[in-house]
Length: 114
Length: 118
Image (cartoon, rainbow over the protein chains, first blue to last red):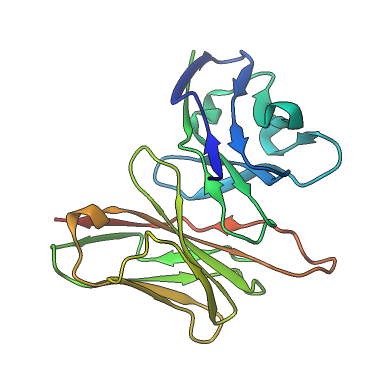
């Protein structure tokens, strides 16, 4: 079955430190890949997406992600975390197009300490 | 572009009551999706529409759940005879499906309706 795994339930980083959130998917072909962020009590905001082409994609708020086909991964990175980045991060995939239902991972909660 | 709007933001109800949620998508978007998110989990797909046609329903959508999009604009999600297990955040998203230059293949989410069943 198609699935998305985010291995880290909770990550704590110091402000100014680098960040990497992991995402792996299970699917026979290349899916459409997304990272969303959710602040408490809020909906989801798209950070970035990968459909095809350059495997390193840039998003909003200084985030980037790299698609690695050999590892079925789409990890999210940020070189320097700000306190305002504290939130829940979800990796999602769509297996036909971006206009088909998304399959989400369980999320990674990011805490930022001073 | 006013974004996806969901009402109400919060709903508290007693077990056995019926509830209805509304979603207003971004105006030019022809696809509309409903997801459910429980505590500590990612959103799970429930159903989606293209214009007024309901294209797919998840097995999560029991017989007590019904969704409509009568004029291809706003959508409603009704839960009959609510159970405590229905307590969750119900998220709506919309997208524009087109092969032309307007196609973005991106789902935009509303802020959700949080349902608490007592």
